[in-house]
Length: 302
Image (cartoon, rainbow, N blue to C red; front, side, top):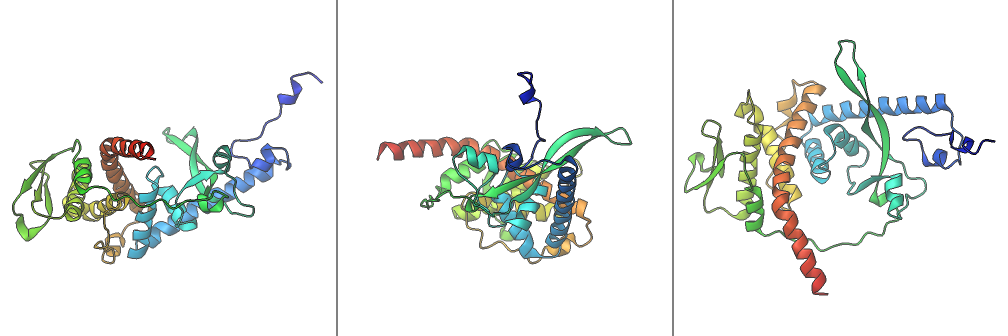
C-alpha cells in the first residue's frame, strides 16, 4: 500500500463521533437520510413553537428567557432550544465539551440546532444558504461538576452608565413627563427624556425600553407597531443584567400576533433580538472591564 493511502478516507462534517473514531460504519445514503429527517424535524419545531408564542404569553416569556441566556443564538435556534431544553444554561457540542475534558453522559439526547452550510443559487438567481443540523448538549447533560457562585448584584449607577454608553440618540433627565411615564423617546427630535427621582431599577426598565425604540427607528418606523418589540427587548436586557423583571407581564400580547404568519412572527422576534443585542454590546464595553477588574481584586485578596 502506498504510504499516502491511509489518509484517503474521510467522513462528512457533522458526522457522529463514533463514526469519526472508526467505531461505527458509515453509510452515505443512511447518513443523508438521517440529516434530512433532522432538518425536517427542526423546521417543524421552529414553526410550531413560533405559532405557540403567538397565542401564549407565558410561552413568549419563556422564549425571551432563553434568548436572554443565549444572546449569540439566532431566533430559529433559540426556538429550537426552547422546544427541546428550555432550562439549558451552557451549551456546546460533543467535541467542544471533550476539548475541555468534560464528557457527555451516556444516553443523553442532543439538542438539534441549525448551522449555516454551503451557498447555492436559487431559481431566480439569488443566493441562498443551506443549513445543516448539529447536536449540542447542556452542561447538565455532562459530567461537569457545577459550583454555585454567589450572585453578584451590579451597582445601579454602573448599570445605568453602561446602558447609556454611546447611545444612538440624546438622553436627558427631566423633572416630569406626561402621564408620569418613566421615559419617552421622541422620534422627531431623536431624544429620550427620562423622569428624574426614580429608583435605579425603574430607571433601567424605562430607559432600556425607550432605547430599544431608538434602535428600531429605521425607515418606516412607527412607535405603535414597535411597542411589543421594545417591551420584550427591555425584558431581555433586564434579565441579562440581574434587574428585577417581576413587573413585566405578557398576558395581553398574544392578540398582537394573531394575524401574523410564522415568517412575520420570526421577523418580529429578530427585531427584538437585534435591539437587545445592540444595546448589550455597548453595555459590555463598560461592564466587561469592570468585571475583569473585580475578578483581579478578588484573586489578589485570596
